[in-house]
Image (cartoon, rainbow, N blue to C red; front, side, top):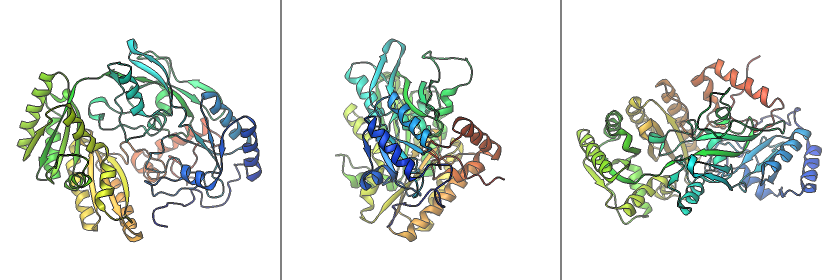
Length: 491
């Protein structure tokens, strides 16, 4: 069936390094005896094993078990180790590169559902940080702070529904990255991690900075659940400043992106929180979705979010207006009030759903991918990629966090022939980005979908070092096997 992605990660039979069906039965029995909720019906296994927004090879799990505490995770990891059963963490289920599927059709392994580990443990307002369980969504973190009247927020803002654990695993970012950076910055002060051995470690204390030893927090950021299971995190918060939104429209994507290149060098850049590109197709999709009273001109557009005092926002918006006009902007709309600003920004955050509605074909599926290049290289990347897409006759929308060179393509396909075209487009896009000194993924992570590109991007020596770390920390290859690390063809 089109787009199910129900292929095995392991093309051959049951790996001898893992336990078999008897071991799985023993794991299930012991989990139930210890009071865990275990699911193994087909519907649940497929729900946890497959993503409707991913078209990479995937398999259903053998069973799903729910955890609520770090102690629960220790017990589950200990059983996985005892019976040599692969274990894959799951929380928000929003990833796009095949991160949370089962190991193989022969042995799916244990899916560790951490979505109930969604509690706020402690808020330290005077220190500007908070401790949370890893299954909490980033939106709920900020809603909790707002409800308690605390004028701080956690600035990492990936797709709706993403959880802290998944954000750590993929090294995510979001629309705020142009101002606040990514997960690989200092937004996670420390992590509580259950290692494959069952041991619990905390990567560091809660101080804002430390030069004591390795930065082990960063070791787990971007490791995609392959080195340990993150159960708690201390988040660094930042003051929540007044913001407003503006939209500038351009005759072409190239002129819009060239305007951003100049903006990055302006003296008011620190007051720009976000710069988002939405191409003409994306703007048409937004109008089609009809989620606003406002109708936009169908033109390539930049969405800006400004932050600071009223005077600095006004000064910044005036400067941006001058710069975008020099690059051919035909219209610049500044939000009249906070309600209009919120409404404008909402459209950017629901881009995927707007695109699906705009395509208007119940057969259609959307392949979403991202790459990132140095900002000065982005005009070339966008121009070449859009020309490639148009030449293949694929319906698409282009958007991205252009302030930091992050580029997203939403590619529609309706049958197997178009799916093959989309796969080839993504392949060429990734190689194009790497040739421009960029990366195969700016924020979605590697999973299954991008691991074939790591050696080309990072070099064989770097990949060997990654594998060496994996072997040292997880010698039994229990945690999320088959993801992140390229296939090892070395003798």
